[in-house]
Length: 571
Image (cartoon, rainbow, N blue to C red):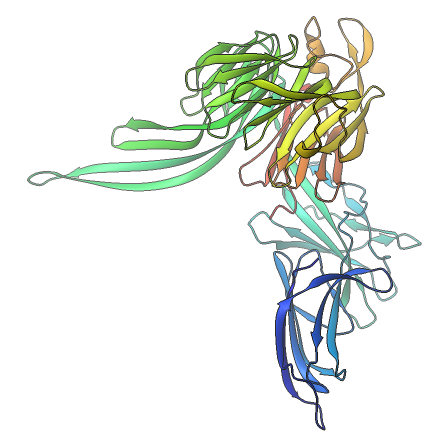
């Protein structure tokens, strides 16, 4: 962890005639490897005055939780975004240098018995692994539960371990029943010989809410709107005087497609659309103004949405303010995935059955181009530069959206790409794929390694799950797939040898949230590791994240629920 800010100040002589010329220092640390192989942050001060007393201060990121000897530093500010450690009047004898180290703890999230629960069914306890062995030698370990719901983390609860296994690898802590829905950051510590607690490990936990929605909620997106309210009043005078006051508020709400009801739920209002709506995307458009008497509301931000009607070969463009359909646009055969441009002018729709992508003008509600791609496209991702990526059964294609031409296609041997996302921060594609054996992967691919006519070769791949099975009521056979909802219609709408087309969300540039046949995962693309892998009551078909990156909405049509999962650590 390079880049830590360190400060030091010579205080007083230590007796005799100290040597050296450096009476104060400030700078940033560099990453070094110690003789024992430990990778740490180190700041080296050459020719500091010694022997003498020094004061030291260091600001470190939250990942480097506790500095270690040779200089002891006390903590004066707790936890993210930065930790401040100070040490006063430290006796320093070395004439040549003054050194301190901060151990870099593993960034991997240790094992846990669970990291996810639904409000109302939170387990009584959680068993956590430690980065150091848990010990009861001087007293039971302790766990702090920090909540980030209001910005800076707040201490929500403190509990002591109810048990520690014989080798100290795990400890079990009670989960307080008072913990409300939210994202939590757990910190565990052992009691030391001095009677002070010493850092052991950290972990993540989410308590989600569950909303029952009839009609098989299949796709979900999140709208964010600013409501500017202007109230004008006329006051007597010659001429009369009109005075206006203005205030504003910001509101987010999910937009959910209801597969069996042929509707989209906007907030709490259901709007009829086409048949079997699947993917939905809210997007920004021009402000919408409504006036009632002396009150004028102007809504800006995400004021429209687009939904793919997989059963009627159309997309519906929706006015989210007035909760109405603006246009029904005919596209290709069985649209299942879509992406809207950041300016809200254009959308791209993947048509599963006729192997095409359709470009839609969102302002006029018309199609402007259709282009053939590989077999059975299931997913699309649009980059900030306007490059469209399309994935499907055995292929990954890059499209130039300016002239709607195929730049190139890679063969994805033995796999189906079921969802795509793009991270501008890392210039990477986040890919969810499934192989012919039913193994599900979260992968990273870079545009730089894409080769037209070549074979798909992700730069990282994590196996996260296996595909489940359900009884296909049409064929009366067990087949692989994400959800039984798609098998309710005849013929079966999605190829039963792959798990449908749930969208994948890249959150804050580094974390990827994606569905698995049994639940969902959160993957750290910067460290190439799965942070969280959890089960849900039924398979997920869509995921969306609110604009403040604090809550993920998960649509689970088979159980008719919409889960709101707080994202721990995002603050």
